[in-house]
Amino acid sequence: MAAGETQLYAKVSNKLKVRGTPSLLEPLLGMGFPVHTALKALAATGRKTAEEASDCFTLNLKSAKTKTLRCHRDDPSLDDPIPQEYALFLCPTGSLLEQLQEFWRESRRQCTKNRAHEVFPHITLCDFFTCEDHKVECLYEALRRAGDRIRASFPAALPLALHSSISYLGFFVNDSPADVIREFATTFAMEVAVLADCTVKPCTKQLHLTLAHKFYPHHQRTLEQLARAIHPGHACPWTAALCSRDMRFVHYQTLRAIFQYNPQNEDELTLSPGDYIFVDPSQQEEASEGWVIGTSHRTGCRGFLPENYTEQANESDTWVKHRTYTFSLATDLASRKDGETSSRRNGELHPCQTPRDVSSIQALQATIARKSVLAVRHGERVDQIFGKSWLQQCSTPDGKYYRPDLNFPCSLPRRSNGIKDFEHDPPLSSCGIFQSRMAGEALLDSGVRLACVFSSPALRCVQTARHILEELKLEKKIKIRVEPGIFEWTKWESGKTTPTLMTLDELKEADFNVSMDYRPAFPLASLLPAESYDEYVNRCAVSVGWITSTCPRDVGVILIVGHGSTLDSCTRPLLGLPPRDSADFAQLVRKIPSLGMCFCEENKEEGKWELVNPPVKTLTHGSNSAFNWRNWIQGS
Image (spheres, rainbow, N blue to C red):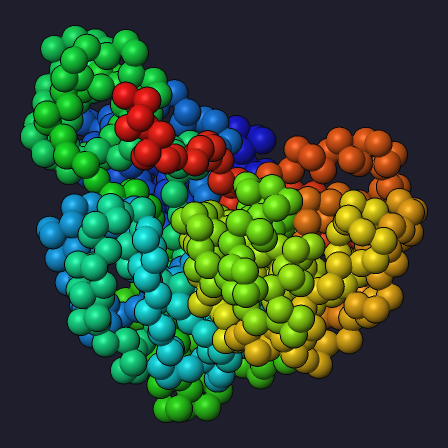
């Protein structure tokens, strides 16, 4: 070894004390491999055995005469300092895993492949993160420590509730068991930060085990029927699995070779049955019909290959499972012998009993978990489509409501002063209801975890909040907190008085799940007619400060459903920005579409809020004119 490599090896040996890293590294170094290459081989194979790692590079270790570099000897990235990406998953085992695998097989057979088939059944505990090759052992120790701390409170059975929508089917983990799992993920993140100096973002969203995702809508009923055959209520050993993947090929398509292929030209790949090939669909211009350009997972080389010699593989087929922690086994070991030291059996971790420091966990959660604010404009309202005279179009002479067009809502809630109160407090149109539900469905698919919901007292905003919550299956669990302080700039409202808005009692009677106990920053009676711009932006700044302080312990997203103006007037105070010029403000608000969103995230490390990408995209659609068949017939 060169002097520099010897020093690096000594440094690594001193740092990594867990399970004798030098014993795995020394055989590879003795074969003449450089330190960085040996460490990369160990990381790529899960650091299980030196033989498994060395097999990445040599053809025959027993025969010095025939010993040649194999596999990655021609890999152009072999010396690149590209680390693996790691993630932690909670995986079912036993009978539940068997049921899920049977569902996987049947759903693929009856409904073709969907996105859920790409990865094994799991609950994601953290986002993928990078770790330097010489620090991978620290991840294993972090997993052991986190498991030890949480195992005493880990539930014997996880309550899984089935949820189905037009593009998603899966089980949700709710209530206190979900909090325990999040605590485990947060503890793992803390331990990794301390031991390996890596930044890990634990999953603080709603925990879920996906059964099907991005499938054809007409397959929804079949998938639901198959899912109902799964019985998740029984006790199941759950295992936390630490896995890694090659970060260079995250967005590539994965193929598996099913036949042997010997290259006919220098720019072609050698294929052996079982080889995995990474293919970038956007870089196939040079390939002839029936051929693709790919990178071999086994050799790291890039070249042409016949596509009909391969089949589609799953995304996780090339992932490496490093270590696992099975909670039921940990509990069994602890019950057999108190204080028993940690040991390994069949490559698994069997941890010892360690006192659980609840206060440190709570402090950690407060440090790592970030609070977020999602400001959303309401859906399309009826007067946007049918004009100011919309109420006359849908009212009978005796003051009753009827539906003159499909884009009018099916019905209106009852109000104390009758239908005339809707004139300046219009409801959502049918399309507005659809928009709201689409946004809620997209938020569900994104895994957003709502902590609380605040709404402007305008009916269209309360309706939007309700439909979003319904799609998230939270309409009974989260009450809508009506905050008059985020109501529209009253100067834009017609009349010399503020609009007559529905009271909490009226909303409650109309079956809106509004909070009757919430104390708003601004009572409804405090709204001033035709207020100045300064009064308006000050009202919003005070309101958003009150909203974020009302739920200081809630980890997750605070949903604020308001108006187009809300996206500016309620986010700029959080970001520490001064109000815009009133003319610029008016121009900006006109461009904000229905269900437009702004997302702010609290950065506790820097003591400020940041504007980040919203969890879902905006719904874009075209106009649809009124149609009268009589006019069409007469004009033909």
